Image (cartoon, rainbow, N blue to C red; front, side):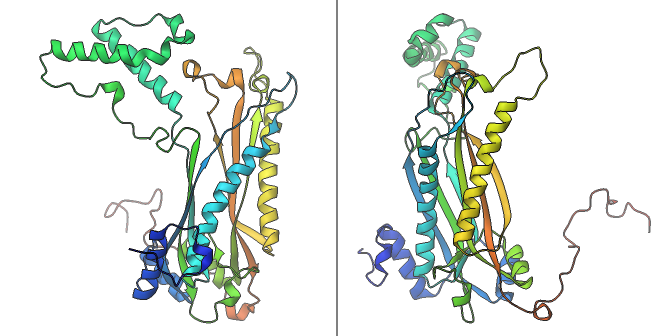
Length: 373
């Protein structure tokens, strides 16, 4: 089946099946969304109609270079890595935006941006190695000397483990050899997309205003993006504001090992470590603010700050405390929804009301039938 030809040229970087899906949605007038029933009804009350679920993704290979910092020097931002991860997220967001524009949307609500870094393969291998050594201890099989783990033997333990498991199964009289317990699938994948490869996925529901949708697009004429829920979006519109974009900022910061610990006999603040994380947060927030200002926003609501550690530098035989030898690699990621006033008069907007939902569970409330009248 060939890709449709009536979609805009700026969708050429999307796969053929994505363009086919968008064309089919426009023809059938059938929308899909991840909105709850309450969100769907509130969006309609705010004057918007859902058009369809839109998404964008990007697989990005990241190859960090850990700097050599003299002892006593503070941490530094890994600018190249910050730019790479920021660019990967932006690619995913742009593709989601392109899908929304192809549907004629004025915006995207309920945006979710997820990152799949999976599990470090060295960490997974080390976990499997430990499980195998526990199994050999329990069943009386030979284990490698401790010192050989750090001299390269570690890389070949699977062959001996397979031989021992085969022997054990045959001793039990099994006619088939099942997968050993240490090789059972984990709940978290181990870089199924490749070592040092990150996957970025952006998903949201494209919406269109029933009236003149132009005022709801951002200053660049593109659909707005918002990570607000349907309820928060409705309340924002009722309060005389509208979203103009989903903004973000990030910073990957390297903290050398000397800053990660003090004397074990002291209870003191790790001041240099604190300042390093402080700098990283400030850089990430400044970049979020820059994106908001570029959209002409007057503020950012729903800001969240997340912190994640990347263990690309971990050694397989020293997973637990590798950071104390090679340093810590931390990413600060900040997101939010940029907003501007709609210019509506207060009498048109109405007063905000505090309501108590009957569905809310009140902490400390008596159980049904168990309270006093």
